[in-house]
Length: 571
Ligand code: F6R
Image 1 (cartoon, protein in one colour):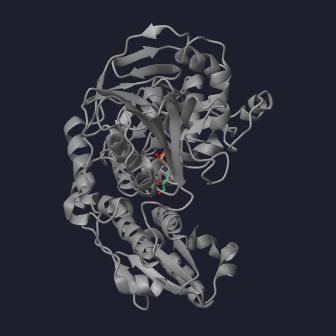
Image 2 (spheres, rainbow, N blue to C red):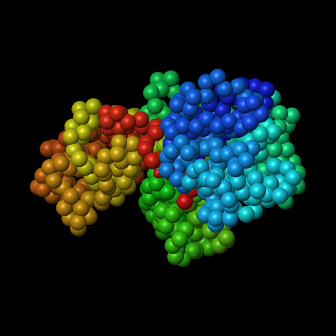
Image 3 (cartoon, helix red, strand yellow):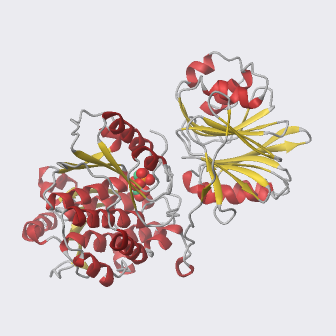
């Protein structure tokens, strides 16, 4: 969360920074700012709002060294004062920071500074300035030893030097057009260069017009190897309204790519415990939901399987099994709670696997055993195509481990079509104050995901519940202002499920059914058919479109849901 971008060189620094911050906006979009040198002094321009607002304020800025930031507030509200960059007491040092300094209150108490903001980042830049060392890089390294928590930082000094460094949060360095760039995300560098350097934990870089130098935590110069940037998807020309829309409509592509890759290369590179007794999934949000679906697939091949919310798992009391495989699912590979859980498992010596959609991410580095997903870059905060890629890849992995044929998977992909969510049903749904999604088995998991998507981007009050649980409490919520969206693709519980819907009807609730069977007496969105286990892939897409249409009808931007950001790099 929060994106930083810094650059130095005789090229269009301001344009590069604005373009870079726009690409980083999905990491946070509460407020934004830049700092640069003007008449030998550091100048800061910052604003509440998005990068377009910043861009207007920064018109006419000419500088050959700039640091910039787009913020998702952690410490301190969304105000201009709390927006980055922050200046040190002397005004000779500016910082942009992504992360959380956990001991900032203690550090703050030791400093005599007239604080301009309530951020931990302002404390960090002052801590750096107070260090006795003789040059900026040594001051930064010295201060980094005194802070607890996570950071990716870029500092600009009034002498025109940029120092960058990181712990736990990502930071990449690259040469672009003869200048040098530090940024939170490789996406900023795509189409600008093919190579980059990845800073490791507690590594630092000095960026000058003449070149870049790298340092370890002891202040020793180190040599680093360049790596290649993967190609990022562009928004497809046909659906270029919003990232979310374009990403939903890439569904078939994603399924085809996943199938092609795993049919061609299989899963033989994945390390599995010899005596595999159990497979467990750990993730957050939408990735947690794909873990829930995956666990059902593995149970079906006879492997005990559990799915855990990472933020619970890391503080829980789970009894670990050395013969289990612990699978961490994460689109970004950066999610703080998932990373922390992976570190715990690593310490225990249990086998681990990362299911990620991002090249060279932290999770891959920790797990050293990776099942890649092929969704391509996902920009919209609400995860859509990545969910499909996770569910489908893990289905194929379960087939592989269970020695099962993948014919049903090939059929499901070849017959896959995007089922639109009709405007008439969207209009109908808009009249309700609450929307409850219900299902059973795999359909319950789709209900969880559909409800998350809806509340995330349209702010409609929504929950999901296993329909058999309704009468144990939640039925009390049902009245004539409630829409119950029932998902029905699993035959084993069909009759029971329909009885649950009747119980809703009897209490005045209205029902919208999403199903591959035609049921009389309901407003129904009909889905095409495929193998029952793969129906979550068919049913989730129209429900993603439902959330998108509700969001647009209510006048919100699906790519920038309030209070959220994409990569959740803080606890
Ligand atoms: C919801 C959503 C989030 C993410 C969650 C985990 O649409 O996108 O719930 O799924 O923050 O993110 P990753 O997969 O990057 O670990």
